[in-house]
Every structure is written in structure tokens, then in C-alpha cells.
Amino acid sequence: MWSVGNEITDRTNGHRGAELAAVLRTLDTTRPVTLGGGSTHSAHDPSWNYVDVGDVHYNANGKTYGQMHEANPDKAMTHNETFPATIHQDITFAAEHTWATGTWIWAAWDYLGESGIGKTPIPPVGTAETIGDQSVMPGWSISRELHHNWGGFGYAYPYFQANCGDFDLIGQRKPQNHWRAAVTGRSQVELLVERPTPPGTEQVALWWGYYDELRSWTWEVDRGHPMKVHVYTPGDSVRLLLDGQDFPGGAATAPERSMATFTVPYAPGELTALAFRDGEEIGRTTLRTVGAPASLRLVPDVTALTTGRDDLAHVLVEVVDRHGRVVPDATLKVTFEVDGAGELVGVGNGNPHNVDSFKRPRRHTWHGKALAILRPAKRPGRLKLTARADGLRPATTELRVRKA
Image 1 (cartoon, helix red, strand yellow):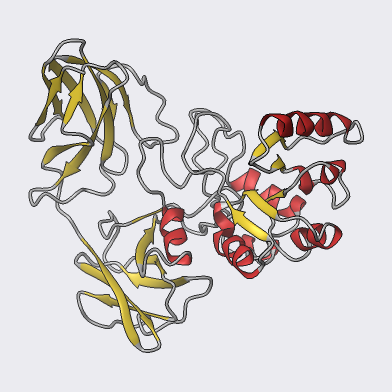
Image 2 (cartoon, rainbow, N blue to C red):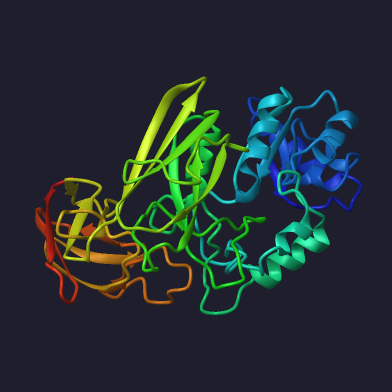
């Protein structure tokens, strides 16, 4: 589709938008025309007169989305911006209505700016009960107050990026992407554990924010500390095992919106989730307590480069224990050295509030990972990257650079 704009109210009674749409149709007759979020303003917005496909941002339900369709039944509708907190609602709505042709997330990938828009709200316990059912979205004023006061929108320094994506700045999956995988059926079971919050508070998934959780059973908490666990699945039943055994509270539970929630007393070992449909197991996954950081590991996305200046290698840096398992929450300063036919052109991590240079040869890990980006020289040869962190075994990777 071609779009004539995004979240623009056409105050000229549709004249300007209609002119743009007409020009587009002279240039390309094969694609329909839309206006991003144009339909959000009103079921009778002037844009309906010149778009082929309407588009609503957020709040996919019968009241808002349905009213648009009833007023314009001859046109399909897309849903080009949605909240991480309403993944199940939005995907289900699109699947149940043939005229709702798709749903996209805001945003797929974390980005600089709109700082802290996706910060996890952590209000006092029980506050979330005042904002209504998240599956249908609460009223603007109440949910806005909770999101702004206990989460973030234009959040204070040192937040510098949005933190609302399905993938972080270096391409690692965020918690909401695991839920999305279950809702869409791409994964049969996903298992994540919420980061503990201060006493008297709780995490809430609201608007662009989602739960701060990890695929981890390695936590610095006292034995027996209650940990909130989410199991995501398209199945109809979930069981949770601790060290291979049933425990109080881990019995079969029916997921709501493809999510089952458990409270588990923490004990180092193994946490296993089993998902079922019609009594048959459809998947299982296990989280294991890992050891202390022991070494670094480098994982490049390519094995060779060319002398073309647009060629890049993205090298993932992982903090691992002595068994080679990623330490899920390791935060360590890593320094980089490059030798041979190329240069270090960028470094990064997924931390939304780690303000540091993207160009200097150092970066802290976030959730046990960081990224180094290499560019080859204009001459063939070998390009070597070495990563070091105090107290850990360093890591090296070498790439061949051949003539383009």
C-alpha cells in the first residue's frame, strides 16, 4: 500500500489528501492507498472519501474498529499501530473479521527517541484493578495517569530510546515477542519470569509497556522468594514443574489470552513448563539456573566479508558460565580490539538507559549480551575481533575478507 501520511487530520475537508491520493494513482495503479491512523479520528473522517483501505491505530475492538467498518462497509481496514499489551486482543480481532486485513506492532524494533515510552509500569499493588480490563483497553485518562506516573512517556534521562519494540536495539527478542509467538501459533510454549519488584508494588502490562521478564531461572533472591512466572502457549492447559516435580501451585492451569500465570517459590535448579491441547502434550521448555560469568563468546552473523564498503558483520557478545550457558542478567564492561583488514564501526546493547558512545571500543552487556559491528577494509585479508572483560576469559573471532 501507499500511505499519504501518518496520524494527520485532514482539516481541508479532504482536499489535500485527495490530491495526494490522485497523484499516487497516476504513478502506480497496482497498490491501494491508505492514510496511517486516518480512520482513528472519526468514522466519517474526510479521508474515507479518498483511501482504498482505512486504518486505525490501537484499540481494536467492536466499539472503535467496528464503528468504522459499519460506516464504511465496502472498505477493508488495517491496524498499523498496536500496543504490546494488547497483542492477543488485536491478533484475535483481525483473525475473526475478514475485513480486518492485518495488525502491526508499534514497534517491531527499539529505536532512539520517545524515551521510555515502553518502560514497564510498576505501580502499588492493586492500582491496576482501577483501570479496567486490559483486553479491551481502559479509558484514556485513567490509563494515561498510570502509564505516565508509573511507567513512562518521554521518561527522564538517562532513558534515551523507546524500549517498546518486539526486538531490542541489537536485535534480541523482548518478552512481548514470546507472547506474540504463542498467540500466532509460531511457538507451542514459551517460559519467562518477571523481575522482582520492590515490596508493595507489581508490574503491569499497559500501552507500549510490557512485563520486565527474562527467560531465566537465575535470580539473586532468597530461597523461597515468590517469583511470578508466565507461560505462553496456544494450548488449552499448562503445567509447571520445579526440578522435575509438581509443586503446590504448579498444577494444570487453563491459559487466558494464551498466557498462564504462576507464583513459584524460588530455588536454584530447573523450572519446566509443559503445554497441552486436548490432553496431549504439544511442547515443553526448561529454564536452568546457570553459574557465575566465566568467559565471553563471540557469535558473528557471517563467516566472511567482501571489500565492499556496505558489507558489515554483526558480532554478538555473550557472557557465559563455565558450561557455556549465557548468564541471563550479566552486566559487565567489555572492551574491543580489532586487527587486520577492517575496523570497528559500532557497538551497542539493548539497555534503554545506558547512555554511552556507539563508536568507542567498549560497551556494557545487557541481559548478558552486547554487539560489535565490523566493516571490512578495501583490501582482502583477515579481520580479527577480540573482546575482553575483567576476570573473564577473552574471546576472539576471525573473518576472511575477500575481494568484492
